[in-house]
Image (cartoon, rainbow, N blue to C red; front, side, top):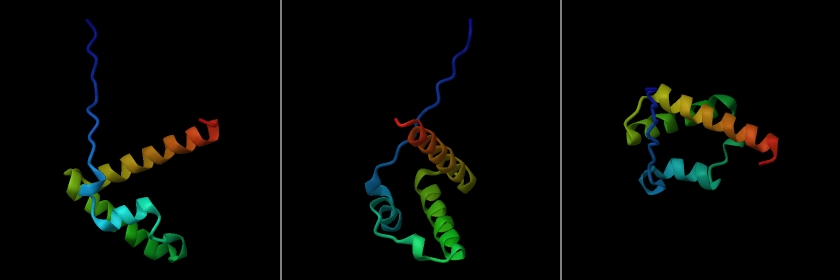
Length: 80
């Protein structure tokens, strides 16, 4: 018999995210005007906050964000 492993999808309510993360989601934080070094700092701070909230490591959160962006790019380019 084949073993099928189902991954559990962890979700967190937007209400639990700090205001800085919510600002990114709603477009209130304009990072495009910041120098690259500052954008990197903002991203690292957000990673730390998200990791603390969901109880995962920063590298894990970074990888999840990267994979999500790749999926969104593929869907966008495929016209979905």
